[in-house]
Every structure is written in structure tokens, then in C-alpha cells.
Image (cartoon, rainbow over all chains, first blue to last red):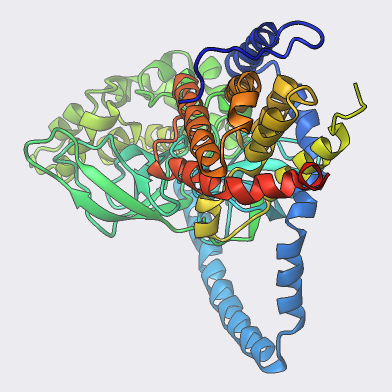
Length: 405
Length: 157
């Protein structure tokens, strides 16, 4: 091309262009290194994000003005229709939440707690999109920042499911990464089987990929994925996506699974920021640990082979998750009844004692074993068998359930 | 140095180009949107290399990083590199007719995007979607009108 031998240097003033370019290149590398490796530029980013927020607000104002105009000019009939629809929906939700109360109480009783647990979400804050996600980078800007108490690594939801989490928080704005971004990974659990895996963003605004499932995993199109509670950002049990395609090739070791998120990640304009109760069993484990690195999460939060170590040292083990006092109360008798605990004392082999305990030999939980190739000693897999196993002392098994939501 | 150097116009046009770069657009327009800020920077580095030069490229790249980059400094490095070459060869590029200029800009944008692709991959934020290359073409097509608008004052005088 035209970039041949450089004959025309502009040597008017200061150092030569080559020197200046070298300087800027070195500066870029330093900035990239600091930002990438150590997060030292978090404050710089904070300031820059605060400074550029007015620009972004101004730039998105035509779109929001158009939206406002549409809202204002809505006709009476449309409003009435929407009102009726919302009233229907409200009635439905009220009915459902009535049932929820009963279920929550029943669940609490089953867990041996005196009272029903409070909801895991402590506080909600509605936020609006300022800048839409681009097709290439599925991140967007919302109009809430650290002045509203938003923190890095906070879960973002809409009324149907998980949308994503905050990555960079500025004073008045925050950047949210969608679960469909290729850089995002969310720990999920298949609702039907309890199988845990990780869902990655597929990169095209509307789908998730589950690349870590073995070819013979028990997954079907239509399965619902919910959060598993690992990873320290999202609490357990929130809907994430529905499986749409499963390609299990007998030759390939891994299945290719696609899922569509419940949340309308590409069309939402309003969403919710959630603060979760730290002491709730279903809450994500303390946010102080895992927010830095989205991909690897906290190494302490790997699926634990829960039961065995706890009878020996109950108190220090339980402290990180800070379970409710009732939970610790249930744990103490367990320590005393250590003799009844062989089933729980063998962690990864807890399935075997459970099977032994049943003289009839019928192990209905057998299909659940297929999941173990993925998630190792899955605590959830270990608990159901141990539940019926020691019928004399029901305490130990409820203890394991709240620990590993 | 302010005499004769269009510093003010350069900064204003860069700011407007930045607004055009971040203004929300519908999906397909968004993909095909030329990177206005880069075009503006290239224009000024060809026609007024002493006014902005590599510094303009670097700071514009840093702004792009703040708005749309996963790592601060990635766009800055890529844009500074391309700006350096364009500043160095500005006389040759300036003397070329419009169509050849567009081709040169196409090569410049491609170099920029390849550099960015490497940096993205190396820093662990790869965007492998082929859509990321579309703006090179649209930028080259848009070069002629863009440079006509930006160089309106010079051409008239």
C-alpha cells in the first residue's frame, strides 16, 4: 500500500513522531496491564464513567424522548386494555403468592425451622437502561450507580428471570453484562434433574450455551435452568433459561446444548437490582469473595462434599455462610449424634451407604448419578439418598440442605 | 502553534464524532455504523498532522475504551498505531485521489481492527463474531463524504 518508506517526517516541534508513538504505546501497555491484572484503575474508571455519563444521557435522550412521546399519546382504549390486563395479572400473582406463603412455611417446617424464612431478596431497586447493548458487546448502561448503593457483581433481574450482573459501577451509572455475553458464565441447575452445570453466553443476543455437559447427560429440550447459587452472585432458584436444542452425538464426549433466557435481554428497558439477605440459606455466598473474577469465581465455593467434616468441627465450618441461628441449632444435635451418621460421614460415597440401607435394593435416585460426571460430588445429589437413609434422626439431612442451596 | 492549525474545529468534530459513535441505533444500523471517531481522527491526521497527531488518536481511543472497551488502553493503542502511520505518510495519502484514499482508509481501518482483535484476544475478551469487521467496509465507504464535510473550510479557501 502507500505506507512505504517514510520520507516525510514532520519534524516541526518536540520529539519525533516515532518517539511519541513509542511513548503512547508504552503508556497504553501500562494502562492495559494495570486495568487488566490488578484492577488498580477501578477508581480511574469510576471517575471516567461519572464524567462520561452526561454524554451518554444526552445521546440517548432522543430515544427516550420518543418513548415518552409514545407513552403520552397512548389512547384511552389502549390504557384501559392494559389496565385490565395488569389487573388480571395482579390477581394471578396474588393467588400465586398466597400459595407461595404456604409453600414457604411448609418448606421452613421441613427444614426444622420454627418460622418460615424471610424472602431471600431483601431490597429491590428499579433501574432504567441508558444505553442499549450493542450486537457485539452485550453490555448496557443503567441509570443507577454507587450513590444508589449499587455494587460490583450485583444481580440484575427482570420480571421473568436473570438478566445479568453489574461489572463496572460509576457514581450515577453502572455497566451491566448480560448473561448472553460470551464473557459471562452463570452457574445453573437443571430444574428437572438437579444437574448442575455452567451456562455461557453464546454471543448472539438471544441464547446461552451449555458446553460442559457430557454427551449422555440427562437434558431435554424444554428443561428449565435455574440458578444453582454457586459462584457468589446469584441466589439459588431463580429462573434463567429454557433449553431449546440438545445435540447429543454419541461420538462427541460433550453434548451441545442451547438455551433461551427467560428474561427479555434484548428488549428490556426496565429492570431490577436486587440486594439479597446474607443470612438466608438460598443467598449467594458472601459477595466479598467472588465478585472480582467472573469466570473462575471463588475457589472456596467449589461444590463441597459437604457432610463429613462438619460433625467433627461444626462451628468454624458454618461461619462463612452465616446461616440462621435455627440452622446452627439443628447442627449441634447432629454433632452429638455422630454415631448415627455413617451415611453422612462418607461424602462422595454417601450414595453407597444409602443404597445399602435399603434392603429392597431399589434405588430410585439412580438416574441422578449421571450428573456426577459433571459436577463431581454434587451435594444436592448426595442429600436426597441420605434423607430417607437414617429415618431415626431426621436432623442431619435438613442440615445439609440449607448449607448447599 | 495555534495559528493555522484547526485545533478548535478538530476537537469539536471529534466530540461530535464521538456522540455519533455512541448514539443508540437499531440493530442493523448499529452493526453497519462506521466508526465516526476513527474517521475523524484519520482525517485530521492526514490533513492537519501537527494539530492532533498521535495524541489525538490516543485520547480518542481512550474515550472509545471508556465507552465500549473491556480494557482501558486497547482502543488507544490500536488507534495510536494507525494514527502514527497516517501522520507519517500524510503527504502521500493527501495527494491521492478520492477513491484511492478510501482504499487506504480501508487498509487503515482493517489494521486497526486486526490490532484490536489481537489485543482483545490477548487480554481475554475476544469478540469472535464476524460482525465486528463490518464497520471497516462501511467506514471506507463513508470516508469520502466524511472527509468532504470535515475539510469543507480548507477546500473553500
